[in-house]
Length: 238
Image (cartoon, rainbow, N blue to C red; front, side, top):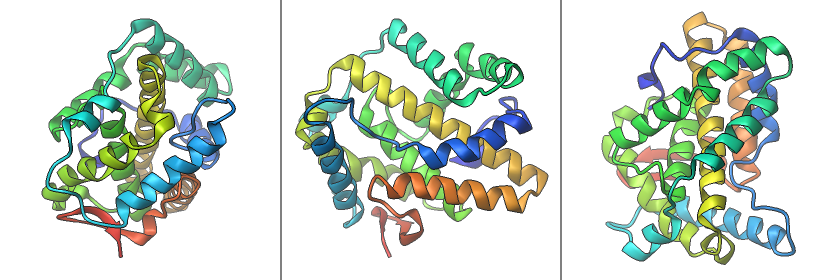
């Protein structure tokens, strides 16, 4: 997936450097604060661990897909855009850089195109998380998932069932699912664009730091991307 990201969407070097620090700090899926938040986060970790512990099923239930689907609200998108720009932009130059590609809606549009190209639905939290895992696997291992098109399609089938079975996730409102999905989309795209920039520039030291940061973020969600391989059944433990 990563090599197909459009070169017209570029990040400044300062934003790329900031990305390395941010991906080390952020978990891909963390439920909103509340009495059951810690239990929910632990359940999500177990769900992801379950997902990669075995090959993808041949199909997923329509109920599970429906549980994770949401309708987009422009107001939610605007709020997540602002939060993301504030999270990644440390100075006026970085903010201006991010406004061009995030505030304009360009980055989310490109993310949507990438997902649809591979048969994923950008308005389904499970599909968005599956795409994040797949692209992160590429970044961490410096690999190209296009070598296993069947595996690309399988990852979504691995994730949707276990994730939909988490009660705290199933109880999320459309707005909460949308916000989580779009936060994940931005994290995925910024990481992927940073990876692209570093590869283009031959910056092996920065690539190593980015890889370590992305790996660390997913480890907190229970998945070590250096310990899984992409095959016909999706991302499974080696």
